[in-house]
Image 1 (tube, rainbow, N blue to C red):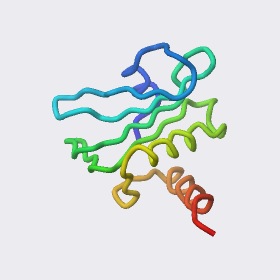
Image 2 (cartoon, rainbow, N blue to C red):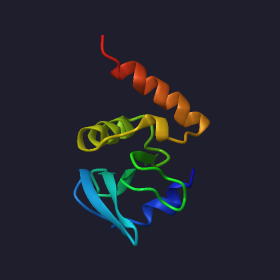
Image 3 (cartoon, rainbow, N blue to C red):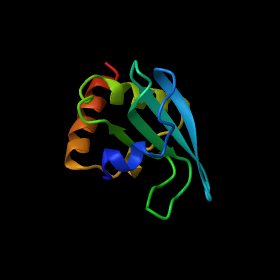
Image 4 (cartoon, rainbow, N blue to C red):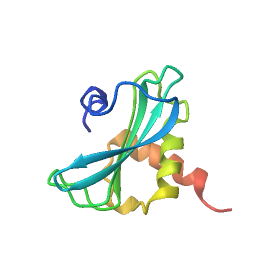
Length: 115
């Protein structure tokens, strides 16, 4: 997984607090980006949804999620993931996870299973 610092520089430095959409334009098409900004308008959460296959190995329906160090464990990733599920078809079978991502994904599934 790429470090936070390499990702956050791809987005406008400031904006309205809370959730926003940013079209990540590439030569192949638009990558859907959800941003979460703190009260000062600083990006502290990023979710990139891939509607097409990328040369880096992202499959259609996959996503990447980053939460700025120091802002983790505050529900930001959960809010971004929930919004992504509302907006797009997310295919969990196409995901590549770090060990930490596997643990987070299992907790997410337990919380969101019916019954």
